[in-house]
Amino acid sequence: MPETLQIGGMPDWDIHNWFFEASQGAGALEKHQEVTRLLHERGGIVVGGTDCGAIPFPPPGFSLLREIELLSDSMGAIGALKSVTSTAARYLRSEDEIGIIKEGNRADFLIVDGDPTNDVTDLRKLEDTYVGGVRHTQSKLRALL
Image (cartoon, rainbow, N blue to C red; front, side, top):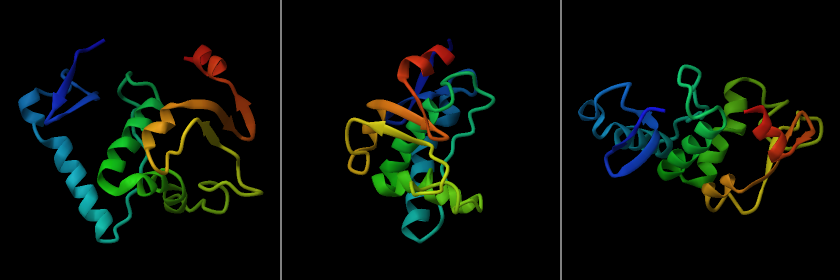
């Protein structure tokens, strides 16, 4: 596995040194966060959803957790959570089917030990995952990796 690097004052396992030299990326993460904060404050739409298809690590899902944490730094926990749920659903023109938990919607959601609306890192305290209304235990999901 490639060695990770640190950009600015924040360690980030999702930026790899095989992609670019550390000096080229200095301050890039902070710039992204500042632009995201400004966009959010001025009423812009921020849609989350990591595009990690070309990078083998971290696996899908884990990179989204990190993205939510970074978005939370820029726009707060609620804003970050909405960016990957209801706002993303609206952007996809699917808000009548996905993005919020309600009767008749496709039931994809997590059960966590904590309150991610106050601290998004509580999403890492995963207890259960439901996809299409079907429960998937942590051991079952780990076996798929």
